Image (cartoon, rainbow, N blue to C red):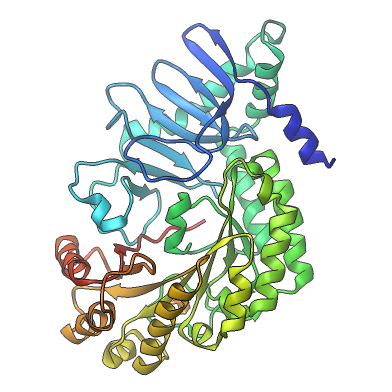
Length: 436
Ligand code: SF4
């Protein structure tokens, strides 16, 4: 039995609560064991919780804050909450004030970030004093826990307090650097498909850079495509295991980065995915249905042969591969400075449809640019693929429309999106860029 398994068995015990003043601490709470799309607050895996009259704080299995939900009258909506990512960004989950959110993003909550992104929604709550106060309240809470007389507190609660109290906001900030130093860089963009697991992925970089370095792209690493060595990949996994610690068991998903892992070839993908499955103990995760996410490119998708897809299909993951097609109109591709031909984009799209039909455990999805200033030929080229080339609606193979320069006119971009979505014969959503 390894260190983590031993610790894990020690921690998987009954839920236990302790009250002092008007604060209730509960440890070993169990959330849902598979991801689902619901229109109310849901938590996954195992966690601990502190309820005060003003807030509900939820902590991951390392005692680090993960969610804060307001209960006071200043909080925008009792069904909305803040989430902290492992890279120490804050995301506000907003349920509404907006009709048809699900049509736009395929989810019941709109994420708002505390950093600039390509959102087409307004009303970002960051900057509101109520949201800032909720985040800042963590340090006072941890301080009050450290004053509790430990002899009066049950052992499981004491163990949680010992874990949680070192993780002040500034200590969490320092922790972020550890993640980025382990994988070598920040993840500038996650695949849109990671929305299916609420962007909760463990990132492992198997190749840096990308093969196109398109002119329009704001998330590229500006590096030549370069493979990581197997030694480097295994080192990342071992260090990630030490970084995620016990909370590793609250993850069922791996992201193989960065921008074109498919171009790394089947051997390195399989090596990385299967080692991650074992080393990060995905099969014993608190959350079922393992998922693997990666990006591909027009060229890497065309070049990957059917034997490789057969092998991927047999892996212990459901695999999502997201490919940036951007446009099937040559003038638009030239305008975007994307060095591929419209003919290749069409071939890549046909292959995506073909692979999605043939392989039960693989889903290839595609992105196209959404921008109010692009010519009609661009939108016609997208509809030619997503409507004219298909004989009926297919539920597999999501199309993501990626807003470019969304500050320009959000209403106009939303209209363009609905026009494409209503005619598309594939599920179609907006790509909200999220980093890690
Ligand atoms: S769009 Fe994709 S391929 Fe093009 S530069 Fe950005 S990351 Fe690289």
